[in-house]
Length: 221
Length: 207
Image 1 (cartoon, helix red, strand yellow):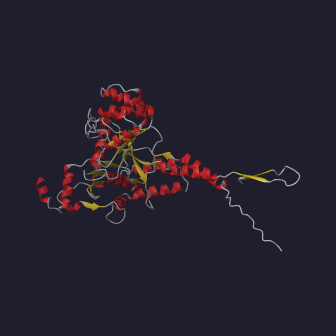
Image 2 (image 1 turned 135 degrees about the vertical axis):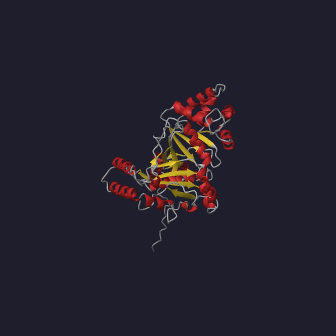
Image 3 (image 1 turned 180 degrees about the vertical axis):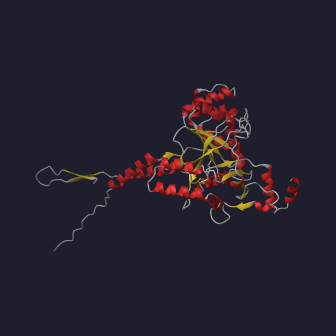
């Protein structure tokens, strides 16, 4: 391919000199390989993924108490992100006297102790509907836009659990992203990141000391 | 008698096909790749199943390293110039020279206190990178005010380019209080919508 026959047309007497002209491509290949290596090391092929998050504004002065949507007690799940990748979680109103109302969870996504299974169990109806919807999208029965519209509608369900995420100072950024991720996996539409209160710290401490502090809580009532 | 002819074999290997292939690969890489922006600190972003892509331009990236240092990264040089001038005005800094402005346009990260800006911009590029590595990042605070320079930078960047999107890129191991400080600054500025940069993780099966 890289050789060219010349001199074929020259009809001279005697020996027709055949010369082949060859271009050596080796240096070109070398150079290209170097360039490819450079591009492979210095660039990324995929753009980074992002997770959109909306936090409420701080000034609650304009917001009256009636405006705040009261969370139904039974549907609220409070998730406290503790130190050393631990999750403490309770449902509904906190029970300060009963330390066993707080449960310890993990991020693994498997087993009874995982946050995912708890949330999936609580949110069963919506998870089913969403997975049906995803199936439709996969079969191309609905397009991306319809999917988004419908899933937003499904997630608005009044009976769906509301998750309150409370990261403690001992938790890491990864913990927070992981929990937000669980919200997405478990199709939870309503969740909020809220600061820890004193009562929550008490709950965690009480849990860790296995109810030793319950006595302190009792007289308050 | 027949003589055994010793044919001279040519060991020339035709590289044309190979060259074709490498050029093709090279073209592919050049067209699809985007360069990794130079960052003063390496961060490992956490993984998530979210598949939303970051916008291509008009992004203000807030980089938080595990020790809580904050760096800013504005992608458009024009915006950077406008922001630098505005920052100079806000903190009553002496005017920036042309060289300093062009140095600021070329520098990808903002990560020093405004008092050090002049000194920083007078340095050559490699020394600037060194200084960024040693600096404490953009000073932050829990409340708004002159000491919260991060808030000022964000506010002025938003003024320079209202369509700017905010993205937070923090290391996995960053303690939450450090991230919270940035979140609360954004909340104070009434910037409620922003993205967290994550790497992709596969959605668990069956969901």
